[in-house]
Length: 505
Ligand code: CO
Picture 1 (tube, rainbow, N blue to C red):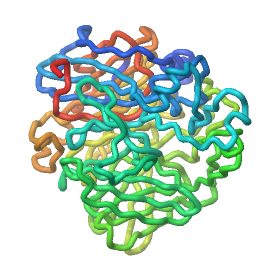
Picture 2: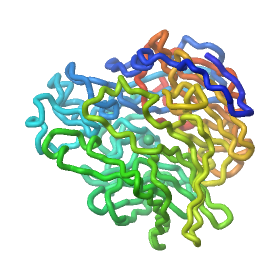
Picture 3: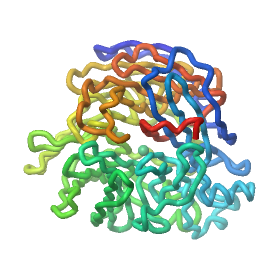
């Protein structure tokens, strides 16, 4: 483990990698067991004023019936919760009991194709014209309106019990959603309106983007749909007080190999480097005209934040030179990190009157999974937290947590290299006044970095995972390292609620 403060960009490039591929691969083992226990192996101390529950989602199974998945994104969703109260922490994990998970576990074999190339056994004939989507509920989990929802962008959410993580059933938001309705895995909470803003994508020759806004009780109070030209693969978006902002990256979809059973849908996406990215601004009022600006080619999965300032809209995003194509013949565990372009953090400044976009590089270290103070969602902000590579250059697995000061360009980095691999850094504000009735609020943000960063770290030496708590003001040494009794496979996204859903439930 190493930690250091970065005031200047490191000039020298170490020749040795900070990781060993076979170590990294071990984090992609299934966790078939479900646990429930108080964490009692702790280095350091859990802050007594850290109160609430961290929820986190990701693939829990990397094979079904002995057949390996072609891509981890096809793995069945497994939700973890870590509930904090008075210096103690309680861990729980459970699989989301989706229809497909239950059917496949009962049958002991793969019954569905995965979007990212996992095919049923039996070759192309067994997969021919099988368009059933396996709703794997594996991407994000949020507590909103008294409901815990596991999200997967191409279909409806699953509702879970926030204490036990048991699956209650599919969630249709009082009939607003329908069976098979998409509902993205990247909602934002607007701290001003205390609404949850999310979207749904219906792709086709033209793409329909539907915006949903839910009040604090979980009721949909606004819904509006917009058709945009062309195919769109949109995973995330950003909000400001007035806009929902989408990047329509230049990706084409050829459905034929999917339809005839040769490839998964995700393998039929083709990046088009000579075409621009369309930046689509949909007014949140649902009435004003949609605006579209163009910028250069590239691919974005995740946005850090967006805000309006001096008549312009700024949006900060992790960009790749190209969409990392899912190769039907490759093994994801054998990925050559050096052969892929890393994600870099950029700021896009959108001049809506002049219809111009300026783009500049904020961070050239390989990074992903940006996170910001929840009270500053859609507002001007100073700090971004990201998962990052240990080395300052090149592409590599995420082994470090990076704090970027957008005002001074200062950086702080905590690295778990060479044996540790980090997940998304979830920022939790210390101040109780950052929340009102359990929701983020813009009043009294105070010190923007006064809080903690929570992240799951896979320790390849012990072959277990730790929940690491960092002081967001000073990343040098973790405040606490909570050793789990097992590993947790590399996951996707999580969220924090100040409500406690621990062992008392
Ligand atoms: Co995501």
